[in-house]
Image 1: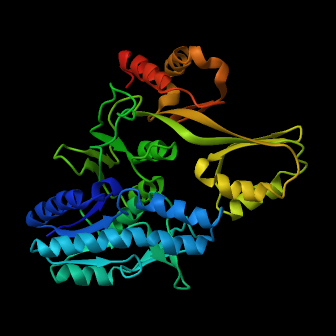
Image 2 (image 1 turned 45 degrees about the horizontal axis):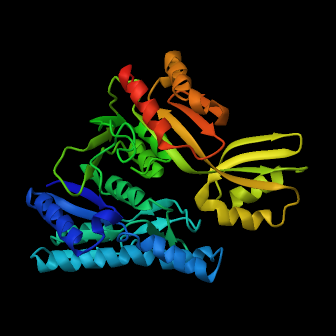
Image 3 (image 1 turned 90 degrees about the horizontal axis):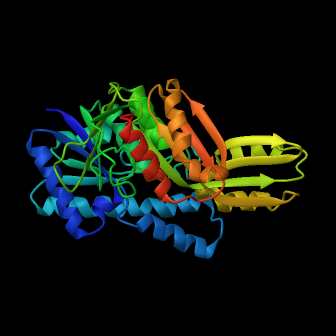
Length: 388
């Protein structure tokens, strides 16, 4: 009898109707002879609402208390699902991250899993229980609740799958796999049957909301196959594994959650960079010249950054921008792809501030938010030439 790990995102658990759909899918997989561990996110917009409420009390809330607060969303999901499964005649138990033996470091809001003690989960499986674990959270050496950062439930699922030596890890959401672009923005986007760990890591790292980037790194490390599929249908999902299809480009990602920060009259940028690192603020593109510091970072860190910049001298500008990334193994070997990208973006060339080319990625950074029209134009041009 195989153990499989299932993860359900917030949209899959948003209300009692969807909870019943999730329960039905779990029961079907259990009745196929599998032992089930189910990892859940918070329902719907619960986490966003909790963050909003906390920020009404403090612009930059205490991170330890934020972890204590945000962890409650997943506990609600897990308990409700266990109640429903039990009512439907299937033994189930909900476990918090710490009850499930998930130990992390003490980096609040972005902690990393150090170890998972699977004893409790295995005992519950042997009792015939469907084990429902709260995603996104664990406990540190001082018994404090910690969270893994937004999207961290994916990482919880893959880490548990590796720890219990599961046959597969299924990541269920409201989309049925990984697409060549966001299907909500690009009508001609199509689903991929499979994709390599490396390519998926780039796609996640560039801002696609399919999988948490750290979960892909874990899956590759332990060679754990991930299947990204839809909660609401039985369509075949996308398998993330070691194998690669022979396609130059796998996906195009438009990321509008990026800020460009410019600080003038900065004598020594390194003290600020150390502070950013200490406060778990990850920066992207970085440049320092003529006492001017430029870097990019995710919008989610804006409040923390502004608090740090209060103590900095110099003129600071913070601007919302777009980055479009083209991901595929060996994409940099095809110069004609870069030519096609530049031709497709001709209309907005004056907005381009940086082009970054690496083995698996070509990224174009703009100095403002650009329309999805350019994403469609680029996708269609690459599709026409059969690069995607």
